[in-house]
Image (cartoon, rainbow, N blue to C red; front, side, top):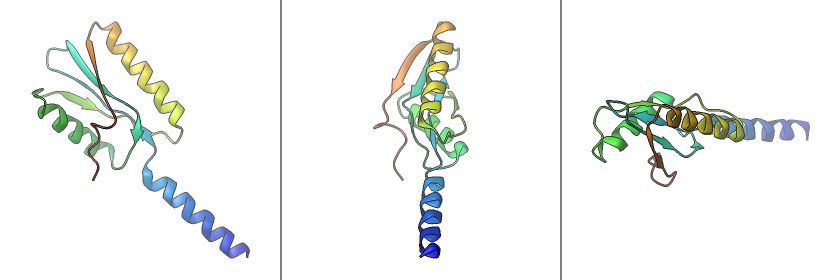
Length: 110
């Protein structure tokens, strides 16, 4: 019985790790007047891929050469939401027009 419980626990832990945690992405357009920030989402893939996907998402909406960053995923969704709030406030303080990207728009589900 203990072996079964241990096996189930390992499967649950592996499943949680496979999601990669919670993150968001933020991008700034050349010239620095506008920024885009996504809602917090479960990170389905590596940061580098998410950043490339966010840049591609923006290119598809006419924003060329945006500098995109997605923070390291957090296990705790609340920590990711707090980091997103801090990033949004930082960009507002710099005077950037902040555009929100809904989770339903990004990341592309693959």
